Length: 168
Picture 1 (cartoon, rainbow, N blue to C red):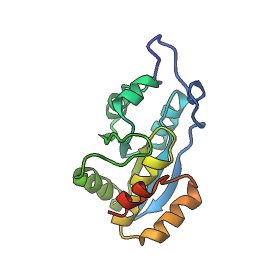
Picture 2 (cartoon, rainbow, N blue to C red):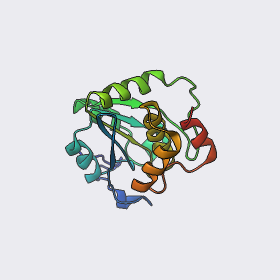
Picture 3 (cartoon, one colour):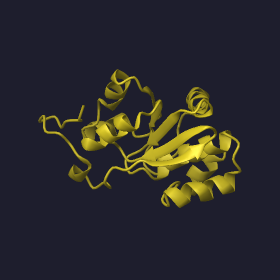
């Protein structure tokens, strides 16, 4: 089900200054952890075809509304995806100090061999920060995990504050 602008027109990543949609996946624990840009238009179908068990959205609701993705959570839940919303401002870190519920749910999925996807607007800083945190929580060395993550997505984790948050 594509996302639509208020006018009813189907939105694509080409409608905003964003990269084309791609899922950047890597093995973590016994599962697959991925990060991506905000899935608009056909990107949403690509995400759904990838069959994630859990998605963590790190864009704010106002940001998603502005881009025409305001109902993303509803669409994902309707498709049977466990959706968690952890809004973070661009280049920022979560204001919520306790993310135990999200972290536990994601690690459970990964350890069971499932798929977890985290995304922000561009698929770099915020989503990379969460991906790195999950890699470390799954038992990887922080520096090795960052190197491995950036080998797949060079822009992952954009600020020192994001790196510090990911390392806990």
